[in-house]
Image 1 (cartoon, rainbow, N blue to C red):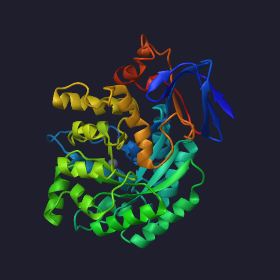
Image 2 (cartoon, rainbow, N blue to C red):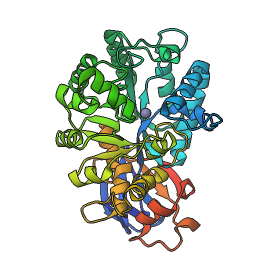
Image 3 (cartoon, rainbow, N blue to C red):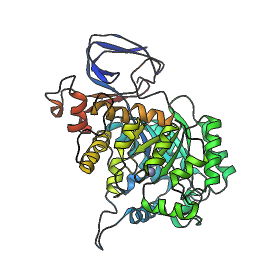
Length: 415
Ligand SMILES: [Zn+2]
């Protein structure tokens, strides 16, 4: 049993002093009176709901525009060239590097949207490498195991995509179930992914949704990040990708659509009404020139939105949550778009980086409350960037004015 007495602790959307947090077997068991004798402010550990760890290897690449402006699709070619280059050992090293940086950024759980499966043949060798890397770094992981069957609507896989190949649904499920048997306890879990409506046909997406629900696994899908995907989907199916999902599968709080940059209002309304989650990745969406998700509408409807570091070109949850709000301010010429029912930006953004991510990954984390996993991000209150902040302004000071250097430590499972 460990008892923490933080200077400040984030409970129910506010920083409190003189509270203790008791942890037993990695779970918070008591929140009681304390003496504030432990240095720092405790936040729930950040939950990064969407990552492709190997893309850490692309940092600084694909940023030379000698023949003019580029798009997501040009970047994707650069990503495929990285995929062609990587051996399993290089892949594992990138994952370790990426997960280490995540802990330094206050991230205690990662939802790894994993589609890079194969080493030399169709062997799914990379899957265990991801889990091993997470184990080495001590980060909590939900391995979101991706199905990736097509190179686009009705197209065959080509080039680097062959290392993602999961054309046989039966052997893919077999691998999901094998991985679920390999992971034990709360540190590692398995969920599912249909990569996108481009890479997985709708019949298979439906089957993945049903099988995931049956197994109690969260399911994620990339959705409507690019206008071209929407146009091709309308050409093929007569409806948008999100309408296709709304019409074809059971949407629930265990299902997360990642990006939703160009989603139509009515489609989003239906998705959120069914309990579906949204994950946005502001830094990657900016880097890839995707566009800006309409958070205003989602906030109004009370939708659950989490955050992801996605391409890992920069790993900072404080920057992700800042840009969740700042992109809206720039786009709408209005301050205070991502706010909770009381108008608090800090509460809204910190929830997105913690409890909403936990909901998307189907884990009992993201909140300093009895019964939750004991994952904490500790903020250095003596850091100059936070000078002048009071318990009442500290949340917003973190959102607006702090970087990773204020992260003093992460605690995972109480350790
Ligand atoms: Zn992604």
